[in-house]
Image (cartoon, rainbow, N blue to C red; front, side, top):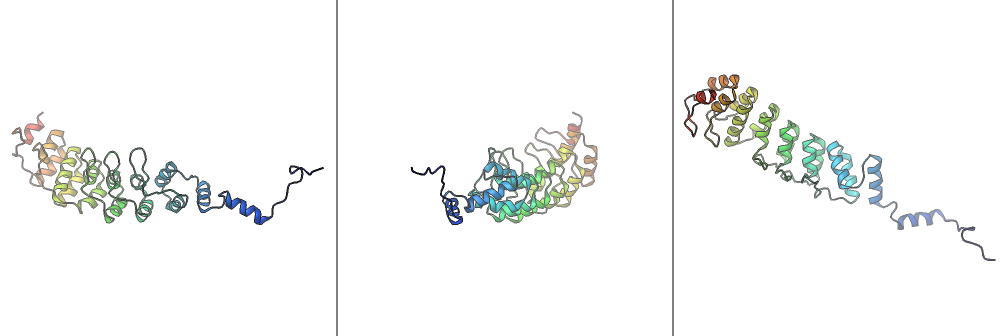
Length: 248
């Protein structure tokens, strides 16, 4: 009578088991990296990578690469790279690690926003400083025409405005001043004037900072601008002065 292999299995030696595990892919560098990601609460997928960069633990980046992901070419449904997401979350160390890994600081998402625009609008000055130092475009505009400086000024991010204004050209300073006057932010306006923004700059419709402040009813801003020699008699394209706009 022949012995049944089910009743009498042939025992495997340790070396045989190791060989089988190797042949089936267990213990490969990719699998090891995947297992380590799981132990950290992630998995070897693009979705998990985007979650990881927003959390901000740079130690996981090599694991994603070892698990087979091309982290420098991954984008999410909104066109965000890992760098844009990390910058938007204010994760300075992660931004540094992603830049070192080769991600492009000039890449844009579907809204036309760069990592610098995202970080600046939220007041993450350390991230902005890091990105500018690695070649981010200060003058880049998103699909709605916002630059990093303009968005920082609009959101009242005074520390970020101070940093970006020190790196910006005249046209950018003037545009940010117009934005700050629209918002009525005297602190940001004062910063921009100290950095050289032109007190009588013009918007595309010919309005000066004083006109914009008057139209918005920002009395403190009006006083500040007049103290800095703003021209109260300037006319816009419809030949209106700041006083005339204030009456509307």
